[in-house]
Length: 144
Image 1 (tube, rainbow, N blue to C red):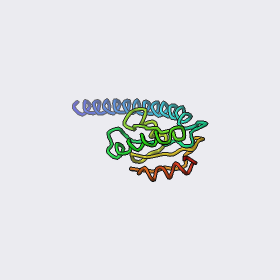
Image 2 (image 1 turned 90 degrees about the vertical axis):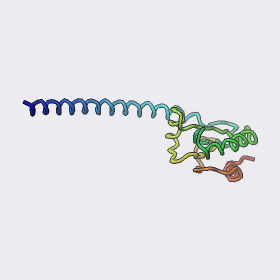
Image 3 (image 1 turned 45 degrees about the vertical axis):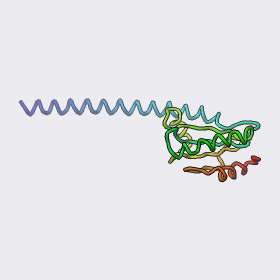
Image 4 (image 1 turned 90 degrees about the horizontal axis):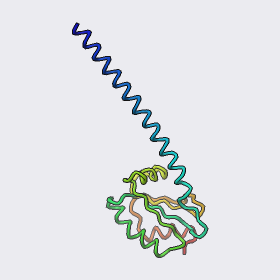
């Protein structure tokens, strides 16, 4: 009798585990589908413009120390090259920023992605990026 109860308990546990696992896999598939749709929609809006020669995308986090060091550089680039360069910041520690990070396949933060006026990536850098070096990359697209 004890063996029978143990077997029933064991199979009940397996059934619950299998059901929970199946439910989890279905919710993951739905979550991936939702993220894929969001990525497609956001891809269209990042860089295309008539007047902007380059888009500088900083992918990082508001609380990341090297990312914080990039903040003043981003502000300076945005003001000094206004009209020529669009500066965008994505915080990957937020739900939307995580999606943006996935879109650009980042491996570390901060990562800088540079897009030409057609929205095509032409340069990428990982880690802190000194302003002087960053300006050289922008000049590759005719920024003055």
